[in-house]
Length: 467
Image (cartoon, rainbow, N blue to C red; front, side, top):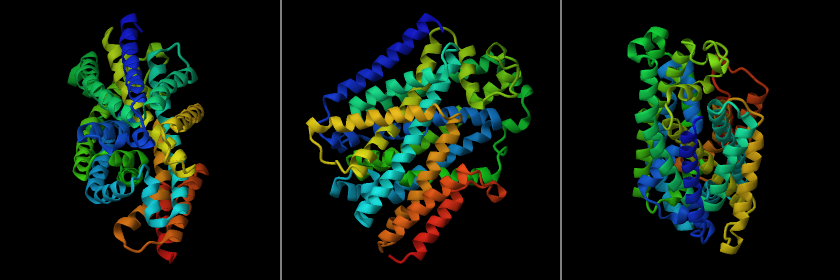
């Protein structure tokens, strides 16, 4: 990597760290640290939401899907559009009303209002574990990008560098630093993809005719995906908009219901079609480059045997000129860190507020939140060293949270009757069923995801238990 690229990348890193330190002195309370004081505007929150939800994991993951199945991989983020808009219509009005009235900071506090302390505690544990895994997936995405760009780096060294930087500015800056860096990072990613990554890769590969000659026609069709795969994505991703701690934090961060709804509509449009197609197109381009032997110097004579999620980072390394490589690398690190910081703060918030019960901390004791954030980040880095697939780790984290938390939330939205024991039982059975089926490798008929069994048992439990 050229010296100019390193300078560009270093300037970007210093900037995001500077934002974190700037907001360090502005955090007076835990409310400031975890939800930005509840005064954020819709554009910043909307960009932060999509940056967090799509982020680096889905960016790298979408590249992998584009590599494997072409533009049909974009259907995965169509579920994000549906989830965002459904959440805006049905969930946000209730959450904003209760959040403002009771001063909520976390998602489990929303459950606590209806089901009690025990349910909130278990929800905090489920959410904490899920976001710990999700944070690890983002660190792994960053490491893969770094290894693809800097051949001299090994994966674990890249994890330490990537995780360390995200850890530092999140620990010091809290939610305001996260939201404002997300806005800055998302703008960099959009500019990088639209004006640099896609055009340069397109020209490097020889244009439209050269690209379509390499791959079968199915890679350019939206029908190169099974309906079962779409159902699995739908069941895993849409419900996360109703149970995601990072999303509740941003709802609480908005000054009113109108602001929150507008932010969610903005986020949905950025997810699909904008980010969905840009991500898979670069992955498709990487497949073409691999088939043409572009990656021979990297040890891959063709696309056979390649890690699909490594295709896009390798493509960018080959096609971008000096200077622009540093900017494009910054763009993808932006996407990754915009998700990693939010998930890290969510896991920390669950641990401090819902598990430890330390909500009303003053400025002198806010260091407890920062220490917990640092420790959680360290554990996430360790977990990332044991994993291989970014998208697999992300979807597993999603599945665990959704199967454990969705049904109690729907109980609040759809029924006036409150059943704390039923909610608690459904959470434990739903979450544990999905994890057990996943880890022991049980094959579900027709290729459905284990989350369907987890949610079904969670719903059945909630309906059967009377209290």
